[in-house]
Length: 291
Image 1 (cartoon, one colour):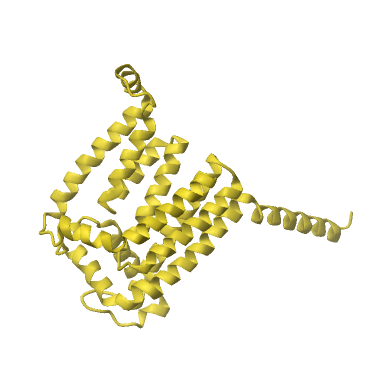
Image 2: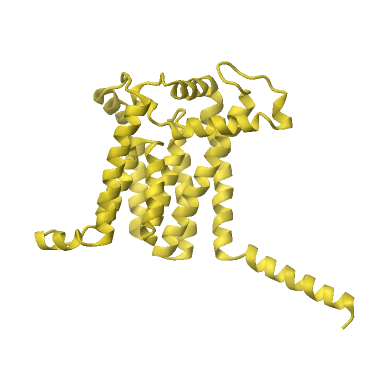
């Protein structure tokens, strides 16, 4: 066979294999998650972040400086990560010429790009893990539908929201944690739960979900005694205890601060969005019931 023909055959074979890889079910699911995450990140920036840029900078700096109120001061993962990313982005040629904004050591553009990159990363993790989890439990087509529905519901929450950089990562950690529980990759789950702790204290519910997933369906003394002998239950209880110790250590390291909200103000704020909450839960329950 002539040399030219052999190279043509190799080229055709390579093209076919590449096409098969790019059109595989897993790649399509990931590309769908990336596409929707990009749209959500842009929409979130235009509707939520850009109009409140000074408030965003203020919240970010207060957490870094330790002057944030009690309800925000322990959510340190995103501000510290964004700080490192922003300083790195500031060194890029297209950003270096932009002046730094006080009290930060980098420009507004670097600040925006840092948080946008973190937002889209969290959304991709969230949607991909949701899709993978539904695929493992049900079917591939329901997984694609689940990604679309999840993206729609995330966008729906943009109606009444202000700068909460940890919210997207909260969803990402929950989705990733549930996927790891389903795969029984408990050591990886432990690492995710510790990262989730320094992102937001509501990560406690992920540990509680893990515990309930391992408990027996029949609630009796004998069944609980047998359950405590199982590796899954002991791992869940151990993770819950480690989270509690980590919570106390985090408070000790960051320091205590005065709170600016009360139970009454939280309830009042939640009542404002009560209709949205009912609608979102109705949509979720209706879709899950149909599936």
